Length: 56
Image (cartoon, rainbow, N blue to C red; front, top):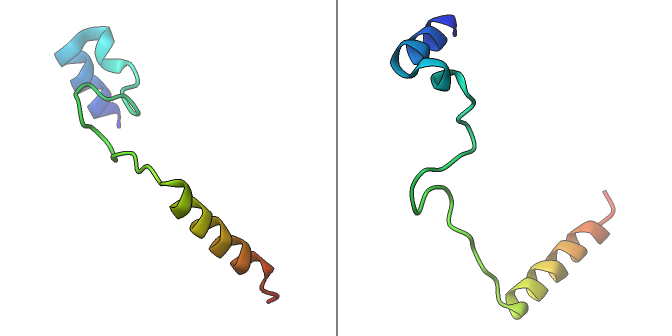
């Protein structure tokens, strides 16, 4: 881990030590957002409710 920090510092200076996780720099990075229609969401919620009503 320290070697990685040193390498980042040597390549980018103090900016290289800043946290980069969770940031995107380009378009279309990460998982695409799924949009549900109201009918699809209703079906999903009904199935979820039915599952939660089952006694173990």
